[in-house]
Length: 466
Image 1 (cartoon, rainbow, N blue to C red):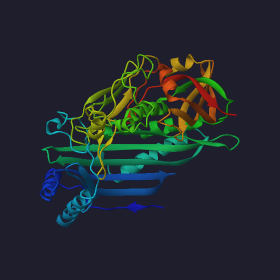
Image 2 (cartoon, one colour):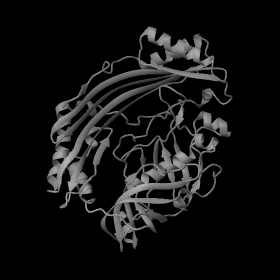
Image 3 (cartoon, rainbow, N blue to C red):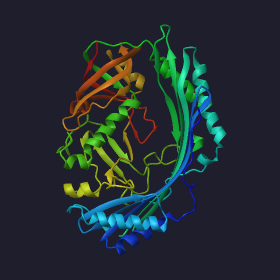
């Protein structure tokens, strides 16, 4: 069955910068002491193919506007997808009606006028070749990835499907303190989920994908299909293991979750609410000595394109920058937007994130653990008995206490060799101890998203199993 959805006009030459600036002026004229407008416009394409047949096809375009207004220390937000004159007038009226009934907050407000700006130069975020591939060829790339997976081994008997997607969009931010910034970005990617079956009929699935800002940087469909099949096959024959305390080696796909947890725990919103095990730990050792975590919203990747989290300015119009979160194992900064910074008596780290509705949040740019010198094979070889974790299940993490307990699957390590698949086990520990017990870091950092990590080894964790 094919499902097709088409809505909204395609991206036009509408002057979004002027639109955002005009909305800000309207809000100020209506009585706002300060105002901020955010506009988003984009086009998306996605297709899902299963066993060679198109299962779902979606093409869509969208355009929407968000407004944040202030009256002294009161603030309110509203948003709309109606960009007609009447729609914008109703947006301003709604926001101004709301701001009159909100409570005052002494920390609310835009950044100071002298703080705004954008990172200079071209960050290489948009490439038109993403739009150049005809729809039928996009579908064919998904088919090729699925076909390569199915042809890899007779035990790959089916697939949950293959997908291909593209997007391109513009965002504009303007405020009453003189800032107007615009950014355009593109994305393309595809992947496949094959199913492997053993001689007893037990089935396992896994996936692999590739993504980039431009079409030319994608892996071939055949390479993606083969890798996905290889990953599914290695899960066959999985078994549970007895409860024990062992070293755990995390593959890059799972190790990245720890980098994200450090960012979340060091987020200013969690700190001022006392909802993080890192509250009060600024300047203290939280990781093993020698380890560094970087958040860089200005990054250009080795292929010459901007990173997945690269942007010229943050969600409040402050210029993007390079932040050292952890240096030599020491927590160097909390991650802050303007509001959290004021609550903590600090300065923003230019990590504000902005949707169309609501107040700015805090988000990473390109966040990563700096790689080490060992290969993944060398790390595994040094483990006498342990688990190589390839997937994590659920979210059993208490950010206040640091208690960590998650379902896991992977490959058993015996005498430095990967021996058989493992499933239905839980790995547990205290995050504070786990981070300080990272005893090895791989050299295999690959930019497959905005938050990445090389392979890591953590000692002293508990595996709960049979």
